[in-house]
Image (cartoon, rainbow, N blue to C red; front, side, top):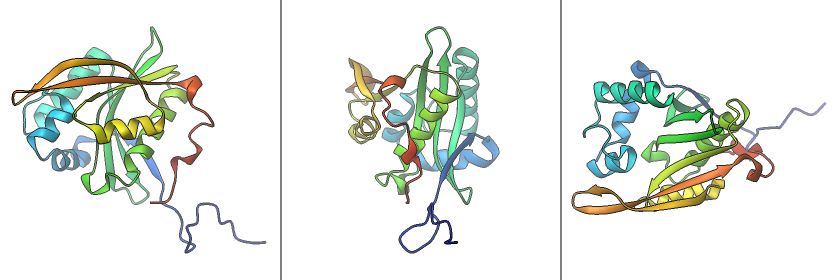
Length: 196
């Protein structure tokens, strides 16, 4: 019998997979802190909801407030070896079955290499399959074209644009609200484990 080659790369090594798990402050904060390393990245990430620079305490307060107000839960994406590659928050409004992804960030060393798409596909799989969301929304500033492109490649579509939604150092940024509907996800997310 031939060996099972599922998950093998071109040289026979196993493809790396990604998982999501709950955010654990004692293990994961240092990653978020390192990734949010400039004032502009901070503004793009949290829209000034916490002061710059991000600290363990101000992130904890924000996560607790969002959990109480919106039932948000924080997650990290990890690779097989446990290394953390991304962070996001998710909540679902049970009145309209709409999920909401927030505070999305990927390790800068991994950006542009498919990690963000893989993490978000896992988040959407969780949203649709486990929380019963019929659609999921995400906001992104007009200034953040790389993130918007990533979201659109997954299947998010523009629902609205709010002009002048946020002011960063005297510069006004618009905010897109993007949405993906369960019924529009064709073929599921079988490709969420591509090789890295």
